[in-house]
Structure formats: structure tokens, C-alpha cells
Image 1 (tube, protein in one colour):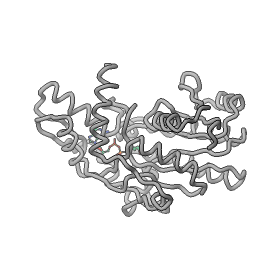
Image 2 (spheres, rainbow, N blue to C red; image 1 turned 90 degrees about the vertical axis):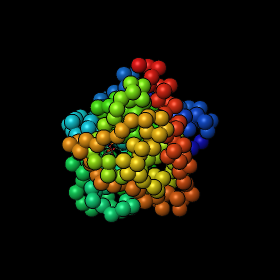
Image 3 (cartoon, helix red, strand yellow; image 1 turned 30 degrees about the vertical axis):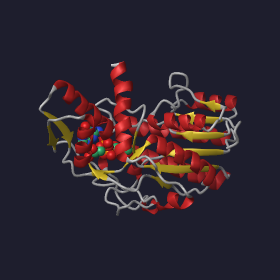
Image 4 (cartoon, rainbow, N blue to C red; image 1 turned 30 degrees about the horizontal axis):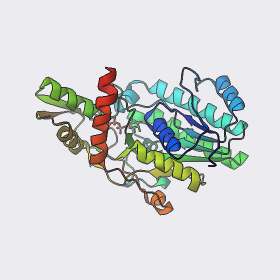
Amino acid sequence: MENNARIYVAGHRGLVGSAILRALEKKGYRNLIYRSSSELDLRERDQVQSFFEEQEIDYVFLAAAKVGGIAANNDFPADFIRDNLLIQTNVIDSAYRTGVKNLMFLGSTCIYPKFAPQPLKEEYLLTGDLEPTNKPYAIAKIAGINMCQSYNRQYGTKFISVMPTNMYGPNDNFDLKTSHVLPALIRKFHEAKEANAQSVEVWGTGQPKREFLHSDDLAEACLFLMEHYEDSEIINVGVGEDIAIRDLAELIKSIVGYQGEISFNSSIPDGTPRKLVDVSKINALGWQARISLEEGLKSAYVAFQKEYLINK
Ligand code: GFB
């Protein structure tokens, strides 16, 4: 990407988009374009098409999406499939119609079958049944991947699809009903410490395993792939290691400094048992994650104290 390229980051206020924007600013890109959802509703086709026509965009990072943890996905299936299909269809199609050079579509590891072998290789896509709690979100993301591939095949565009594992970092969502596990546990343990509560409830059995990637690592990977990857096939981004939710809870408990008990509520679903990504493809290109989980968790706890508690 040339230094004066016009780069649009869709979803710049979210966890992923804000990290991509920070990484682009750090690298000295000057023509960065972004809009809040009140300025530009990406679900509205005409608004999106006019925006692309006016802006003469060269590159797009498509990080705008309706996202949430296991409960939000399970409770609002219609919103997850509708909003994601609309956002990605409008952005991908407008990018093609206005001659955008490259577009990166951000997916998720929930596109892989629930019981796929581990670690998840890119070729496992569409080889089995999906996890029911996030099937509508996963199907929208799979449609986005196929849309990029189909546009590349029919129209000769250069649209790539990147599949990050579970993420965390600055600008995370700490709402206990809609957030992912990592920010939820930071908040729960912090509030329990403040209130001297006897125990903290962790959803599910504690047995599922998840892999956690810091959003600054993902942003570096996205910039790297925009320069070094041109294939229509998807590519995973992860750290190559996972952790049981029970052990994650213990780690967060010790970082926060909470002294009480941990209880497990197995009436809440566990979701996918495991989704560790195979990172050999991106590693072979020369990229590797740098931020360890422990280091990342410490900085996430500091960010929580700054971002969340100050705005409370
Ligand atoms: O992060 P999470 O909501 O999403 O949950 P998924 C991960 C695991 O942590 C599940 C457990 O087994 C949860 O039951 N968990 C324990 C908790 N305590 C909590 C808690 O307090 N809050 C939450 N949220 N979970 C999402 C998908 O799946 O991951 C999305 O629904 C997306 O589509 C995203 O792919 C990355 O990893 O299960």
C-alpha cells in the first residue's frame, strides 16, 4: 500500500477496526477514511454506494460486523445473520463497483465445523456441521468469504479473507450479556474483588478451550497480509496455542487479584469444544503473533480500568 493510498477502515470503533487504524497511523499512512455508524449506516445500500463513489477508495479493511459472545449470538440470531449479510454485501459490492484495488474481509473461526479436527486447517471450511449457538453469524461470514472468491473469479478483483481466532484488546465490549468470555471475566473478577464477593460465576463447564489473539497482533497480521497475500483461499490468524476456560478464569483471577472462589454454571452452553487454528500458512509467509496471553491480559486489565471504569 502506497503511503498516500486512500484506505477505508470499516468498523474503526470496534476492537479489530480500531487496532487496524492504530497500526496504519503508526506506519505513517495519511489518507485514512472512517465513518461512525451514525454517519454511515453500512446496512443501507444507497448510503454505502454513494460513500464509495465520493471517496475514491484504494484499499478496504472490512472489520465492520455485528459481533458478540455466545449469549448474544444465541439470543439474537436474526440480527446477526441480517446485519452481517447486509454490511458485507454492501461494502464488497460497492468496492467492486468503484474499482477498489484490494479488500480484506475479516471472518471468524466459527466458520469451521463444530467437531473439525484440531488444529483447524483452512481446508476444513464447509466439511461438517456448524456450532448451533453461532450458526447464523458463521453462515453470514461463510457467505462473505464466498462472495470475495466469486467476485475475484468473475470480476478479477483482489479480495482476500482472513480468519482470526477469538480476540481481545482495547475497545473491547464489557457488557456481561453480550461480551466475549475474556472481557466478561475481567469485569466479573474486578467487580467481585471490589465487592468482596464470595464467588464468581463462570458460564458452562469450564472445559472448552479457546485461543486468544491480541487485537494489536491481529492488526499487524492484517497489514502484513494486505502486502503479502493475494490468494482467494482463506488464511487463519492466531497464536497457535489455546487454553481451557477454567484455566483462563484462574489466570484472570490472579491478574486481577481476586481471593474468592470460582463456580461453574453448566446450565449455560459451552459452545464449540475447541477451536485452535492452524497457523502454519501465515507463519510460512513470515508472520507470527508476538503478544503472550499473560502480557496481553495484564494490559487488557489496565485498559478495562481506563476505558470501562472511567465511563461508568
Ligand atoms: O467468548 P465466548 O462468548 O464465545 O465464550 P465463543 C467462550 C466460552 O467461554 C464458552 C464460556 O464456552 C462460554 O460458555 N464463558 C464462561 C463465558 N464464562 C463466560 C462469560 O462470563 N461470558 C461469556 N461470553 N462466555 C463466539 C461466537 O463463540 O466467539 C462468535 O459466538 C464468534 O460467533 C466469537 O465466533 C469469536 O468462542 O463460544
